[in-house]
Amino acid sequence: MKLTVNLPNNPYDIIIKKGSLNQVGNWVKDLWKPQKIAIITDDHVASIYLDTVQTSLENAGFETIAFVFPEGESSKNLDIVNQAYEFLVKHDMTRSDGIIALGGGVVGDLAGFVASTYMRGIHFLQVPTSLTAQVDSSIGGKTGVNTPFAKNMVGTFCQPDGVLIDPDTLHTLGKRELIEGMGEVVKYGLIDDVQLWNDLEHMDGTVDSILENAETIIYRSCEVKRKIVVEDELDKGIRLYLNFGHTIGHAIEATAGYGQVMHGEAVAIGMVQISRVAEKKHLMPSGITEQVIDMCKKFGLPTSHQPWNPDELYAALTHDKKARGKSIQIILVPKLGTATIHQIPIEEMKDFLEK
Image (cartoon, rainbow, N blue to C red; front, side):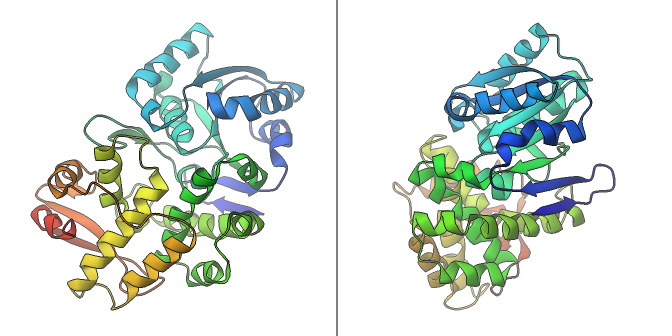
């Protein structure tokens, strides 16, 4: 399967193919001239896939080095970024060389940020190995790292030269890591793709069903994101639709301590919470909250979080990138398969945090 992100300045393909990780060298050879490649990954992914990727790249004529950092959201920070810069300098990486992000969303965000800022930018590729990264974070060119104030507060827009997705990598994920990716998949069905939502309704919600339907889930999710990114690359308009559930979700991640609540889990909780309050305000249709809850529970996603501290959550979301002065843009679903941007005074977000 192939999708083209047809951006005017940097079009690239998303390849979705089982077993493709073993052929990563041939894929890169079609995109890049011979050069030095820095593979940026975490220690968990490195233990499973680094040898395979390095061997394939070197057999294709590339020189490789690997920067490996500790697994987890808590590593997505400027300290690790500075370590990566030092590593690249020590290994004489130039503007003619490239970076490959090998791993989940944390790896992709951090590696993309490093690539986009080292020497004012060198090219990079995304090879996502988690469901969250395959359906969402590897596509669209957003890079970033966390600060103590907010998630992804420091970042850039920088499109990769390509994305290679091997659904077989999902078999090496833990159950929780696989299921959290379904938070983003459920979101895509809600905001854009009724057929995807229907497909999810016909699945039994087990890990086996996710793995059996992985190619379809990934393809339909990527197609939603591809379409939106092409229309709004820099997040000025409809790309905000992709943030349904994220404003509250990011606040949950920040206040819980990065890594305590996984991203897809926080998105699920955020979607339920915003739907519940919006439904009460008659901004979303009656009964939609139950649909969201039922779908999340079906796949084992959380629908609530404890402890729930509205004051702490409000303080965290005031730093959200969707805040504009004294207002904030939230995403609502007026009917299944559609999304709208709703701008409210930031103070009104306190209503959306009430249980």
